[in-house]
Image (cartoon, rainbow, N blue to C red; front, side, top):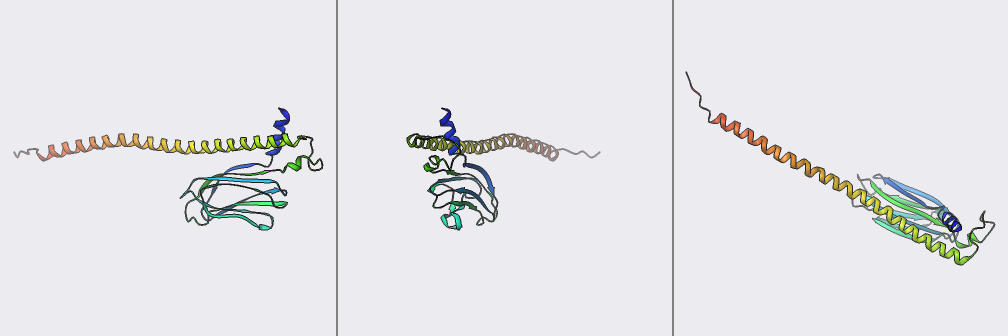
Length: 203
């Protein structure tokens, strides 16, 4: 059990998960290093802001464009690193004139299988059998997918809870304000009618 847990920690040492706000007319970029044949996974979801869309761009070393989209609400992209170097993920909200965008994303680098077999590249003797490593990779991928889904559902739950609380407050406020306004109008009408039909006597 302990070797398996150590493997999982090694596999996700390069995983990054964030919740960020991208203001209007702003571009935010994130960077991570990867070696050739490493598996890179990017997934994101725009949670709030405008039409819940944002421009996405993924760049390889030397600024080679791997992916670009002008308006995406969510996405998941997985590819193998084509060369050693720094990979860049950018979220561009320059098309929005006023609305900031709140989004959740993960930028994950999983090392290639050969990394664990080369004693010159690693500082441990974890995972010597390829079958075990493949099983661990499959398990870790499934666990990561579950983790991402739980985070997404948690954020959605918080958003729905805020909307529910806001609607509940407005209903209570209007249920108090409506009868109060009706009572005030009734009192004013009674006062007005009483004054209107009041008989004034001249002595």
